[in-house]
Amino acid sequence: MDSRPRKIIHIDMDAFYASVEIRDNPALAGHPIAVGGKADSRGVIATCNYEARKFGVHSAMASAEAKRRCPQLILIPGRMQVYREVSAQIHEIFHHYTDIIEPLSLDEAYLDVTDSKLCQGSATLMAEAIRAEILATTQLTASAGVAPNKFLAKIASDENKPNGICVVTPDQAADFAARQPLKKYPGAGPKTCERLEKLGFITGADILRSSPEQMLHILGQFGPRLYQRAQGIDERPVQPSRIRKSVGVETTLERDISRFEQCREVLDGLCPELHRRLRGRAFHNVTVKLKFHDFNQTTATHQGSQLTSTLLDNVLHIALTRANGRRIRLVGISVALTEAPPSQQLQLDLESS
Ligand code: DCP
Ligand code: MG
Image (cartoon, rainbow, N blue to C red; front, top):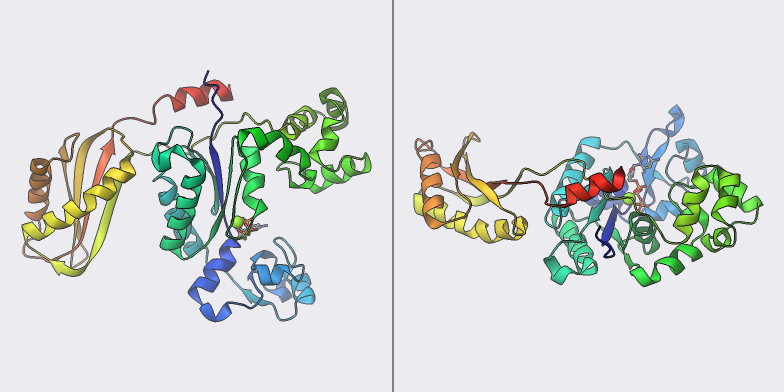
């Protein structure tokens, strides 16, 4: 088995639904706002911005209580469709860095970048690049935690929120885990924490003064696991939800085009970005997509494992024969990946069994 420390990134958007609402209605900026159900119909708060949090408003609180704490709170009903679209955008960005992505919710995911060669292999630089790409694409901020495992990465992403990053190196892992209050440990709910607190366990360090056996006695199966976490240990693999089958890029043109040479030039412009996103993975066919000014579209596919000039000429030629005089408003290129991420899959199977 591979004994190198892993490089795990946890990304979590800041005040997600609320930030999307402020982005799309800048007049809300600076005011305490919350997304949730109405105060007079037993609604609850889904989330709120940091201005509202200063008044003690938080997720899952009754909207009526939130209004009591913060009478000037602006309550917004929420637009799930938009949040889902932003979620898809950020997941697309994650895929520029690795395919080993485990989504936790719309705004949160673990990434295993242990084998990624980008950013000189630095997980810290990758996390910063991901945050920058998210901001450029969505105008929203995300926070990141970088650590040798999921447990530490998740706590770390909260450390410098909003719009922050926290890196826990392998040699800092044990100290970092020990000094955290147990209520920050994912999996330790309010009831458990209350019980532990009564017994004198407030931080990870308090747990370490006990023993796995004593923790088993107090908490059952969760006890020894909590002891491990307090040591900074978490062997759970990042479990990708699905395997990516293709990688592509496309661009909507500022002005419609129609000639072969123009389309070819756009394709040439897309290839470097496609190469970047491929991260050296092998592919076995190439697809060109054209969208016409009447919004219909066509795709043409050709076998090939390299983006040669001849191949691009051929595929584009096939696609263009379907234009029938229509101007083109979007050009895209994608490739079908030959295999799932190598070796990772086997490793996951072993670790989770
Ligand atoms: N959410 C919800 N109900 C909850 C908790 C969350 O509907 N009880 C939704 C709204 C949040 C989104 O999920 O915007 C993400 O949840 P987070 O816990 O990540 O909270 P936020 O992103 O809103 O804030 P933070 O900056 O603390 O991550
Ligand atoms: Mg969040």
